[in-house]
Image 1: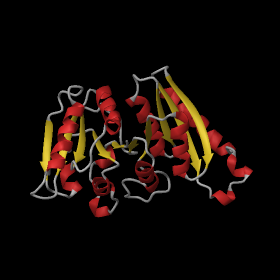
Image 2 (image 1 turned 180 degrees about the vertical axis):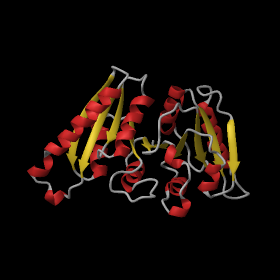
Image 3 (image 1 turned 60 degrees about the vertical axis):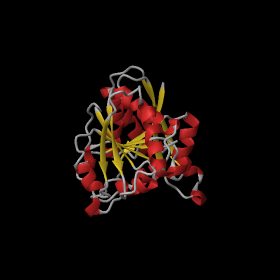
Length: 270
């Protein structure tokens, strides 16, 4: 039984992410933990902030009723939780308490400005909570994941814990993983990068035997890289690889990746 955390602010984006979760894991028994967080400073944590308001309860009821109406797997269960705390604290606590396997959330919430690809809250959860995060855009509609794009410069070692989620999701969808090799100079790959590449290939084989699709690039502009690889259904990054994460998650308007609004983004931890 998988434990999946669905942070929600009851926005359309978080609602779409919850629906996506039900479709993605339609054949997998899951406990879905719905979490709403009221970000209140510690010095204002009075009794009035600690309990769920009638408005939040009503929003939860509506969301659960809607999820029940689209559920297809009787082995999907829902648990609701309200927490008055800073978002990262609340998410970390819930991950530990419920032994969460995956956080699935919208790419941005109600408070994010127009044009932002990844909202601040989602970006913070991706980088600061040591749990795999799958971010879903409000524009994304579910389809089977047949080709997953995994950009890497091989500057970090991918341990089995980091890769476990990717291997499981790829197996679930019977997907191919397309490794996008990104090198920054003519002297790369180094000996260490080659060793990390070989370990990564060994980690996938033979579980995903149709992996052998590679694309090597020395272009550091993620916009151009992804335009050349637009035939994918999901993008995967490793949180430990801060250099690549910063390139792909940046929000400057002129760096926005044209079709990332339709693609799930998975950030791995380990």
